[in-house]
Image 1 (cartoon, rainbow, N blue to C red):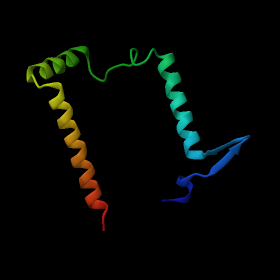
Image 2 (cartoon, rainbow, N blue to C red):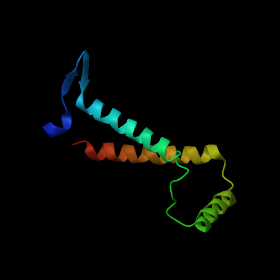
Image 3 (cartoon, helix red, strand yellow):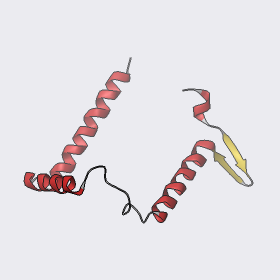
Length: 91
């Protein structure tokens, strides 16, 4: 890992912080401000027209899959992807 990505410890008064933790915290504070200003995700636009969204909802409802099955399949996909990446990274 490059040295500049590792960050370093800093001291702000009595606080001992790490630069990566500080930057991550600032990023989450900024994200919270964006959600407060833009009323959560209500004012975010969708990348496709409303008719497309309604079509996707009708398609998903037509599948009639139980919610737990969908979550289980998504978890299975994540596990398979992680295991494949771990297998590739080993020498």
